[in-house]
Amino acid sequence: MKKILILLAFILVSQLIWAQTDMMGISYDMNLAEARKHLESAKWVLLEDGAETVSYQGTYTDLPAKIQLYKSSTNELQSWLYSLDFSGDFDDYEEILSSVANHHNSVSFYEGFTDTDIILLEGDRAIYFYASSGTLYIEYVDDDLEY
Image 1 (cartoon, one colour):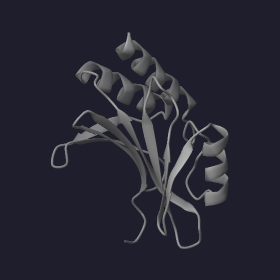
Image 2 (tube, one colour; image 1 turned 180 degrees about the vertical axis):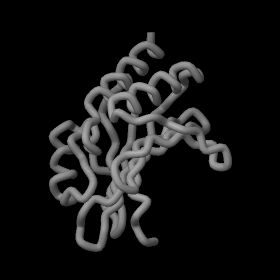
Image 3 (cartoon, helix red, strand yellow; image 1 turned 120 degrees about the vertical axis):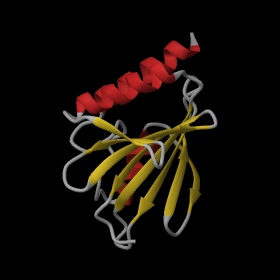
Image 4 (cartoon, one colour; image 1 turned 135 degrees about the horizontal axis):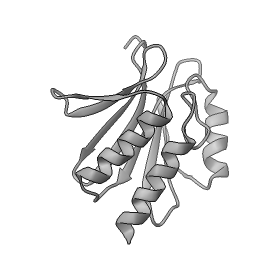
């Protein structure tokens, strides 16, 4: 039953993601204060407010999740990372990945060196999917950034 709930939650998430905006209404280049407002209105709890990152914990009992927001020097959101408890099997992972890619009218490809699935978005932006030690990571990145 828990496996089905997790799968349904991920499918719902994938249907809500659109135009480089995620399920919480967070999007690239959004003002950090606005991103925080979206998370707090959805009952996410602030864990840490650092100089470069802000972390929140989801309050969903069926789907434990955290999000880490990475901010730019101008206090805009440049990338973010969801980490979700994931005890699903490979088929669940593939279904989640496929749903998100289809919703973005994109395809995913596997990058073997880093063991990561990647969905390309407009410009140099992408969503990275990877699982490790019972955690599924969904990372929205802007590869055009200078590090």
